[in-house]
Amino acid sequence: MRASGDGTGGAVPGRGAGAGAGAGAGRAWGGVGWRVGEGVGRGRGVGVGPPGEATEPPAPTPDDPPPRLARVWPVAPRPPVLRGWAPPATPYGAGHRGVDLGAPPGSPVRAVAAGRVAFAGRVAGRGVVSVDLAGTGDPPLRTTYEPVSAPASVKKGTVVAAGAVLGTMEVPPAPAHCPVSCLHWGLRRGDAYLNPLALLPPWLLRGSPSRLLPVLGVPLPGRPAS
Image (cartoon, rainbow, N blue to C red):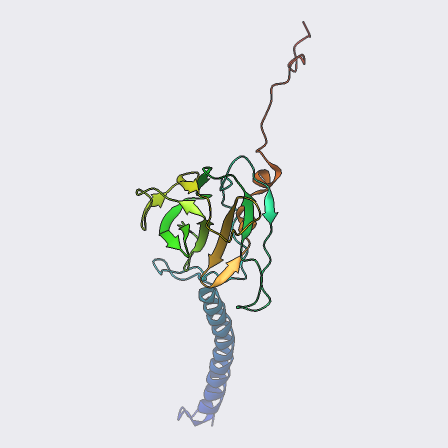
């Protein structure tokens, strides 16, 4: 029977072996393929795609802390903070949407960081200059300075560097925002107001950057003292 050569006797083992090997290989490959596919899918989900595929960073939100990109105070030398940032409990509630910095009329007002002027004009009788900070996302961080008398060269679209003079402190109309002359400095992203002091790096908050000073009277390593 096995020697008859009609294939009947050998067909059953043949199908069994073929099916068993095929199913086993299929299941094994299926398992590997699922894991590989899942890994690639997850990788692309976080922006690791094939070469040439463009990815975009996540859009900033008001909850993201502002980057410490300020290079100068708006008014120099380091001004006293007459009133700090006090965000309102509700969008239209009472609060203080910025900080007040003591500065006499005529003081130069400077852009704290590089950007582009978004507005320069008068609002409710006060001179106002707003600057969208470069490289801070969409919508960008916007700093606002008032009361400021801006020259004709500072207008919407003007590109400014960190430390560029935006104008000078003007005498505010009554009623005054502060009991003494002050600059109101604000920061917002879209409709959300933020603390402008968060733009200042620690060395500006302390007062001045660290400097390396020469050490006198100490011999260099390996040399005898003279």
